[in-house]
Length: 103
Image (spheres, rainbow, N blue to C red):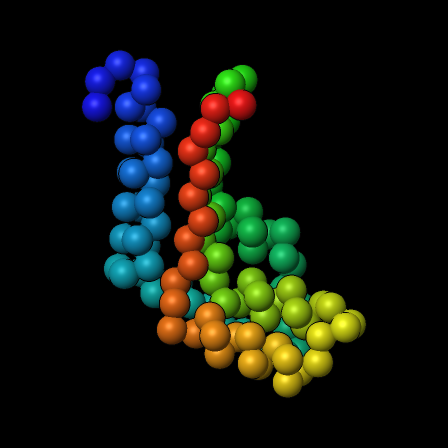
């Protein structure tokens, strides 16, 4: 990768590798119980890394199943059965969202 066009991609690659290393080396699973009130904004800030300039943005977001559990527990329209059903879908997967673009 040469010039300035490769830098955002290299930065994104380094960030993704960093997150994967954290997931593998450091057990980042959170203990979650129904009676614990999780601050979704703080959880998002901890799991999201972003780099932004006036014309570019790069973001990587690890979205753990605890995020979904906390979101659904604070939604009065979601039943416990619906929450469990959706969490079972996420259970075997690690969800990472990545964005790298020009504004």
